[in-house]
Amino acid sequence: MLDIFTTSGPELAAVSLPTWVDLASVVVGSAGGVMVARARHLDAVGFVGLALLCGLGGGLIRDIMMQVGSVYMLESPFAIPLSVATGLVAFFFPQPLDRAGRLLEWLDITAVALFALVGTDKALVHGLLPASCVLMGIMTGVGGGMLRDVFLGEVPRIFQRSNLYALCAFGGAAVYYLAVVVGSVSKFWGSALCIAVTIGLRRWSLHYNVQTPADVDLAPHVRRSVRLVKRQVRVVSRVTRATRKHPGESGRPTAPKGL
Image (tube, rainbow, N blue to C red; front, side):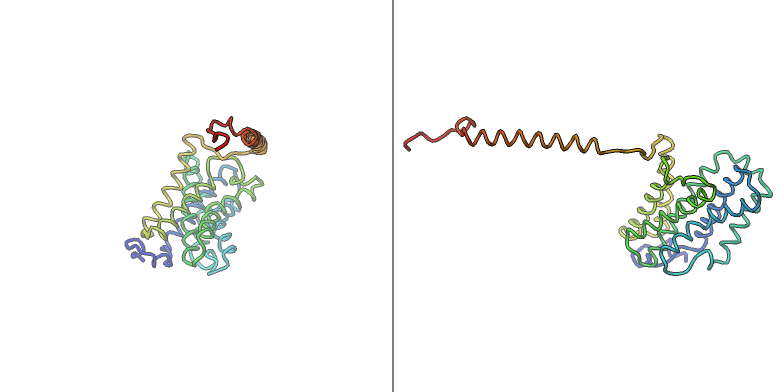
């Protein structure tokens, strides 16, 4: 399994990432879920439920969409127990969460980065098309958070104006695919690039307050551009007709009569 991280080559695209990468994404995603549960003062069921949704929800959506291979959360002997354990430990020992400060923000985007990585890799292993691989990375990255928001009765964050959330998952998934498939980079460095790009885009958007646009209406600009083009076409047409009627006034010499 270590060869995946030390060797490069297109043939390694069909080799899965180590199991601990998947489990790390589950734990980090579940931790992000329990942070939200603590902020909402939910009960033990709420802690475990959000841990499962955030830790396993994105992978479940991915596996349902792909319909190839197995459902990871049902096949892995550790995924569900780890997610449940994360929720219960956080519920019974919440003080570290209260002192975490901005930990939720980092857990959230780190989970997105890890899920985008494992989602893209699974699609890559099963030979999906490039666009499908990137889409699976995005859905795995933001699926858990989307389910969390739906279960909490909120509009999912990926549908709101925000500091680059789903676009971060897109960037990481695309970079991983290009690095491993096109650049023949080892999966270790491809994974590092995916995580770095995803987290880097998020931190950049927060630092400079770069947000996705909302309430965009390009129709007035399109109409204005169309009117401008029509006006230019009419001017050119008038000049062309005038030149045909009076060719000597176009500035080009004309042949003397009688020659």
